[in-house]
Image (cartoon, rainbow, N blue to C red; front, side, top):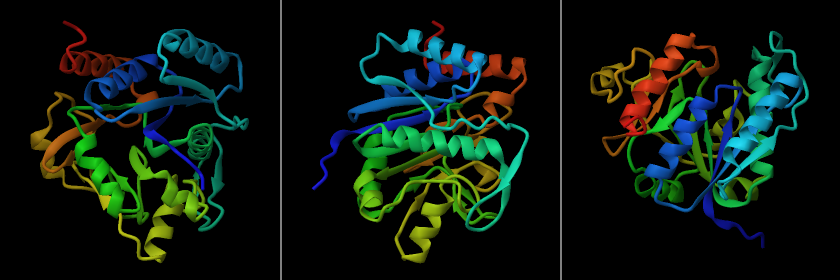
Length: 258
């Protein structure tokens, strides 16, 4: 029987802008009360990405539970599109690159729980005591749902590794987008899963009145009526002033700027 380490493996894909990662890893440390390891996975396909990889290694070298991992993806057609292998939906190549990065992180870790995270999210409150129990009776827990694609999304996506290993599953981009395959597996096999309340356009936009962070963009995610996560969205493509706004507002909230 395969043995797993008793921790949460946080798998984060990154494509530049160290400031997002700095805030996210700080918030993980501040609000995560369960043992965890962080795997930051990034493409290394050219000189610029190699420099970023080295920057990450240097910045996080003092942390014993943060690992910088080179993604197995070597394709670099960022403007191209390709069909998902099962449903044929055309998606941008970066979705496949992100999925490959997640796979790399999952394959290089061995924790009891796997938590996929966008790098432009930040934790707002303690969350593990609310989320971890849900993974016992649910196949996975996700921050958001895409009704038009009929899939759970991967901005925050956590599951008990053994449940996926037992059926030979790993989140990929074969149906709709990343994590679409595991959503459809759960639906086809009548396995319950949990979608958190959120203020996205696919969730409940009235919850935006309860946003903690003073930001125009993004959505807030709730568990047991507690706001525990904020997702900025399009992090790598945000204009410099919006990126700096995120750094300032989130830094203030986490009391980093004091």
